[in-house]
Length: 425
Image (tube, rainbow, N blue to C red; front, top):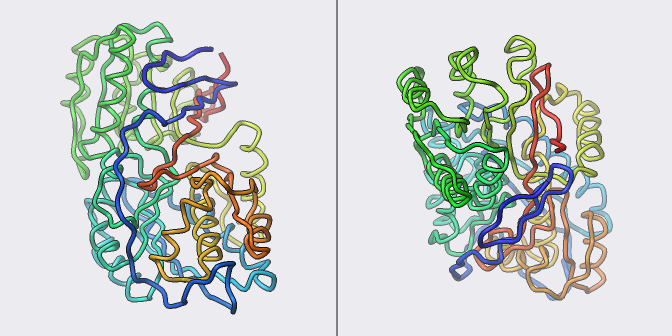
């Protein structure tokens, strides 16, 4: 299977699109920040350090289904980091918080609470629109904001004092893959139902560019707002345009939208995105979604089973409910590992010092030794070397604005029980 390309090299291997972002226009910004207290040294810590992290991930709101895998990814990484603290001198503590969404605004009380705990970094939010509500508050306090799931291109040029990072790639990449996938499937016209926030409209923009660049036409793209509960007008507008395919660029609202499409539009011509690709199971009658496809940034196919099995075993060993979703768990895990490695490399838990080392430990400096686990990378750092962490979610490799420079975009397809599997052409 091939994917149409324009400004970046894109290939698909067994349902996984590998996209290099080197052609993106990037803007630099200076580092900053004052969180934490330890002074940096040249080769890791000279004494024991405790790195305090907070999470602002969706325990409630329209992305609440992403909260459990993301928090589990953080917890799993912390457990592995602390397992080798006797060797590294670094221990990580986490204060968990709820980002909510732009409707319930849980972040309005949670972010001040987390900052009051003296954290060096806050992992979150999942939603780009939600992160934009508190990024100034976090980075203005001299604290790192590190999202495992923000994909809006707004962050690439955001004035964040060098304190914003993400392990999820920009929507430029996912939009290109999805738009070209829809075109390659033979569709000439496309309708979209789009969440009216920085994530939804940004992703819709890049899907449109890719689809129309491949010769297609977007015939309808109505939007809705967070908190809306009725989508009859948007559904009617899209169906009236009689598209060959419909892309649902939404969050959890998709559960309300889908029943109105069943019986009126073929499931195999529906397309999902990372904000709503979920294992719906018996929430809908069997076969309701058979053949529908979706994309989200994620693991290599070989890594999916190993990581998710290990994560599930960890969750159950902690006495927690088994996970039913794994989206952005790997990105959350990698964010936590990278923050710890950067603190170790800086010999400091000061946010500004950590931020200065995040590009280095991700491989952005170009002179590090490749390593694929926290313990392996930490050993390199403690021995005086430079580590280049290749994560579970991909190589990562931050550019000067904290964006990953390459990414894997998985392509998935729903089967008869309304769960999805890796797509194979």
